[in-house]
Image (cartoon, rainbow, N blue to C red):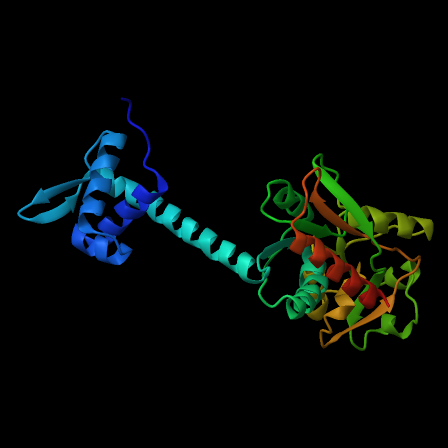
Length: 300
């Protein structure tokens, strides 16, 4: 008979013996008889093909092979326990886990509002929110690490189902009291005299802004290049210049920063990504409905 792996019960018993350092202690911890533990260990040793424990002067000592197995055994026992807790939560009240990945502004404005509203309706549901760049957000959905992803720039990748939701317009932000804020609507001509904190022309936002400036007869001169809207806010607060960012930023309410609409008007649709060809969990579908309601309220 060829050696085989231990089953889940044998791993649990092996882990208990390693932690309690005795068969008696492991049996008491697991609520089973001492002979049952000894029998499970003997069977595990036969199946793996090597000894797990030696008895020296009445003490049970793990072999080097057992020591090597312990970290993975601990991980498996913890994962099984977590799975058991989750199935119990689902059985008792529809609880579960919804995992969301979102890029910069969405992760700190739209997602927190939607999570708060969703948890009020589903108090037993656990949420996981991750701030990632747009491409990594798409990868998280593809790999199954997130149930859904949100970003403001298109990320064409096979295996993703993409839905476009109405998003904000781009706005100009500047330190409070800055002369550009005297304008009711800011145009490229108003921005040109001031240092511009903005995205590189190799990014989606940068290319959109290049087109807007070119249509007004201006070349976009970037004094400080950034990759995230929140980074632009920090530099503007520090006095590095003015910035044109997505309209979600105005919902943060940062003191010391003013904003104005930017023209020509640039609307940024929100890209919602889910796995293509894979049914979403019911809770994730329900969260998307909450997300859309919050998005509509923010736009209004």
